[in-house]
Image (cartoon, rainbow, N blue to C red; front, side, top):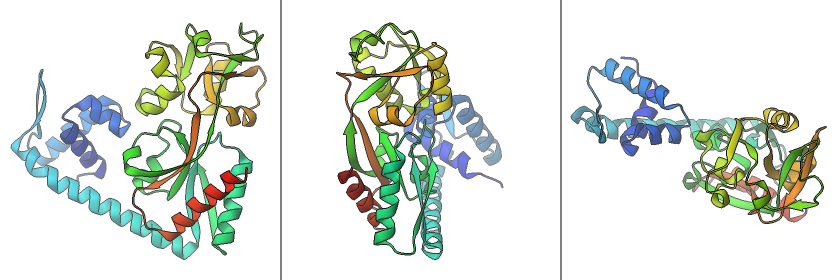
Length: 296
């Protein structure tokens, strides 16, 4: 019997949410893909796992029997992969760290230098995280820590230390009506079309759309998952988009102009790592992040 870990993750998510759409959002998958995975799992097991009706989803007897087994299997496997990566890191003396591509190189350089001072012989291997699901690597155990902009999906499973708070700016194209102002307010943007992160990014998408102020009523011109697509949409005058003030210094593009948004809630840059981790190497990295941010 061939059952994939992904199929078990889909099953556990649906079993805990009792809702296919919410499970898909939690997994950052398309809802049809989750449904297909469940159907395949049911076919492999030869038994229905859920009763689907217009009133919702319920576990069958087979589903209730499988849930604790699947949960335990995933917990054991995830724990084993974390232990394996910790052993590998100790052997190679390389710490795997994720970071958002918009973070200033000067900050990451200070962090790496501080970490190497506390851990002679060690190095940091930095990799860019997915815009839509930046914490996934930490949650899956693929990386040990990450430098991210909050909020992030899955925060309840992470330890978080905020390193800095900074204003947000709006990126505007050539010829935009607001370029004659030094700063703008959110009310000035209420009729604009926005560049947005994919819907699956949840709270992160809402934050960068200022959904709390606009009530989720913004027009969305495009959904993007990387900086190139973001700026292409702004340059073409299809949309505007918000980014952190330091990101505006990093991303200098022809045809893109920035204005400070006076009344937008500040963006928070943080280091995140697995909740309740006792790994001393990770702790040293977190300390290096704090010291680097304080010295900026």
